[in-house]
Image 1 (cartoon, rainbow, N blue to C red):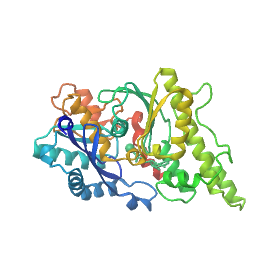
Image 2: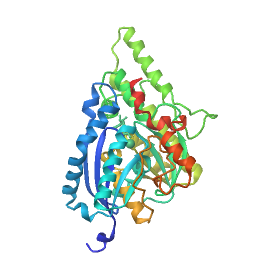
Image 3: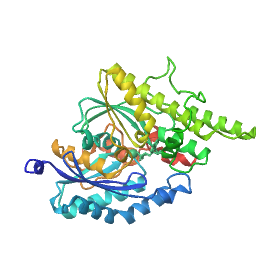
Length: 382
Ligand code: KG4
Ligand code: ZN
């Protein structure tokens, strides 16, 4: 026990969307992963309602923190730091987590780390497969983002290689599930139905895979429209929609493009480790196809177990612990949530001491189009 005690004990808080997650890790060892989800409260709206999510976070926060501490069998006084998702995500939801983290950090006199949600989705894999190889290519696919990221140090260097130019992968799953009247969120149910369908039944389009298209960017909007039209045509002809075949063929189109581009990026950049994270990484077909294609290309694949792919507090704690382990300076206590925090910033220093005014300003007021797709769960309404 003596050496593991030297590793940083960190509590992480995640509230960027609809899950109130609190995780506790010691170094790269997971001690507790407590979650309270408001997903049921959003289901009837067909997407996450920000105000409902914020209120649910507020109600769940203290009990979830207490549950995590009890699960880990540690006292808050023993923590070496508190980390929290500072962005990107829903502004009001993030605010609840950041406020709670600041309050605990201040009251307990512990360092505070405002970390990036996307970097956390990558770092979580350390809890399962040990230290991340450097460099690692990461395919990050969730309801709010779809990106290829190259990282040589998850605490300080995350470089975007490509991203979706319209819908996120998970968003496409959710929208197609809605057209098929399958409920929300759509990913898990499409995954399940697709197992009984024929992935080659319908040839749906593979976005941005032409020779002149950007190699690492994604587009799922054309696919979404094609699937919706195909279903509509069946319905108006009075024919039954073969739900399982549609689910399997749609899923095949998404996973084909994701894995093809990820493997290509690894080969082009000479990177031999690929990690896949985010909610869509829970998809069974994506996992199987990635395994097959990586094996063929001589790339080592790392995918966390499904429970660590969807939003959770353990991933935030994992990145916080890495910040402590690498002696990164803590965030200032006046840290603010940033709904469009760029993926290139794994750690938010906070606005104190104020030296770069333009930067601080951009943080509180920027809602530029650059980051719109990173927080596009609101688009689920459309
Ligand atoms: O990472 P996450 O929990 O939240 C965001 O940060 O967005 O991802 C949620 C997304 C949803 O769109 C959900 O439909 C999708 O991940 N998802 C899946 C599966 N499980 C969750 N998509 C495909 N297959 C799955 N098994
Ligand atoms: Zn996420």
